[in-house]
Length: 91
Image 1 (spheres, rainbow, N blue to C red):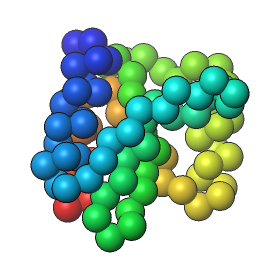
Image 2: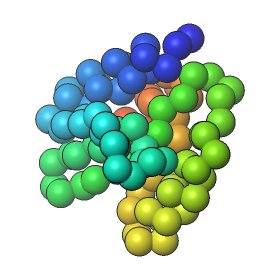
Image 3: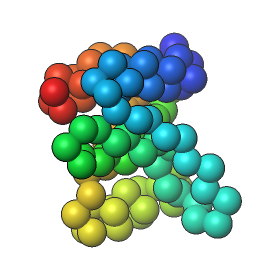
Image 4: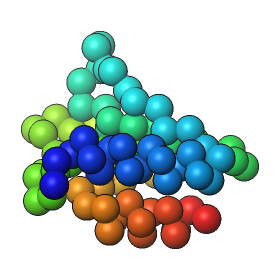
């Protein structure tokens, strides 16, 4: 399965919850996760999407750790099943 299909599915599921799934185009800050998920109640999650079995690029683990140290929730999702698990977790 391609990353794009997982991304489209995540966006649709987040919108069903009344949230936004905003795509980042990080021109000046490399390594930032692909999507910012905003959910009712002021909940925010950074989501890095990958094709199944693919790992984050070289700088991404550093940025993910940096965001986590700042207190943000950051997830790496590479399957539809992981999208479903995320949606169940945030409901």
